Length: 112
Image 1 (tube, rainbow, N blue to C red):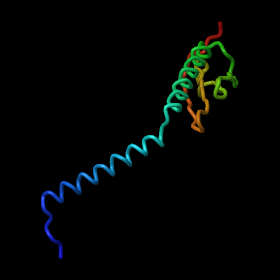
Image 2 (image 1 turned 180 degrees about the vertical axis):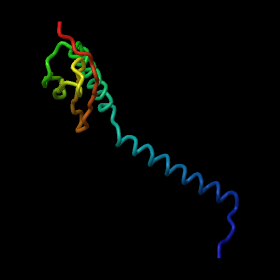
Image 3 (image 1 turned 180 degrees about the horizontal axis):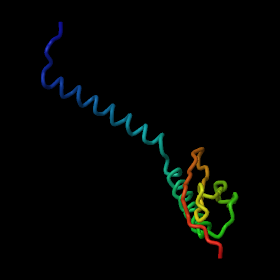
C-alpha cells in the first residue's frame, strides 16, 4: 500500500535529486574534457589548416609528406582523385591525446 506524500516531502525529495544530478553532471564534464585538451585541439586545428594552405596549391606531387609540430607530426597524403586527372585528394591527419583528427579536401592540380 502506498501512502500519499505531502507537498513538503515532494519538494524536499526533488531538491535532493536536483543536487545529486548537478553534482554528478559537474563531475562528468570535468572528467570528459580538460582545459589543456581544448588548447591541444585548437593548436592541432591551427597546424592542420596551416599545412593545408601550404600543400593545397596543387603543385605538389602525389605522395606522403610529414610536418613535425610540438605534439607529434602531421601526415599529408596527396593522391589522384578517382579518374579525374585535374583533381587531387589531400588528406591531413594528426593524433592529439590518442584521438585522430583528419581532414580531406579535393583540390585542383596545377602543372605550371
